[in-house]
Length: 103
Image (cartoon, rainbow, N blue to C red; front, side, top):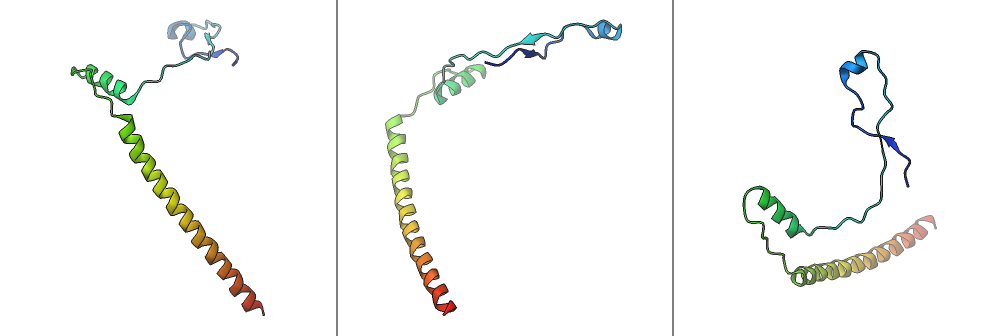
């Protein structure tokens, strides 16, 4: 997908470069790979293991969190709809006042 490009790995030593020797750059390529996504609990378990603790971390119940979040989203969407309706009413009033002022 991408052409080869210069890597950040040196292809010679500093002393060789100071001595006037030239090297072809080291090239690298990017390849698309399928990466396994880790859950937050897996990441926390890995960090706990690095710290010398227990690698087991309980995963939160997805249904509890998602239902609470969905309830919040629904409430916010209802608030948004009410505010949009109020905004539309105010815009109409402003237009009416603008017409009255011009007369």
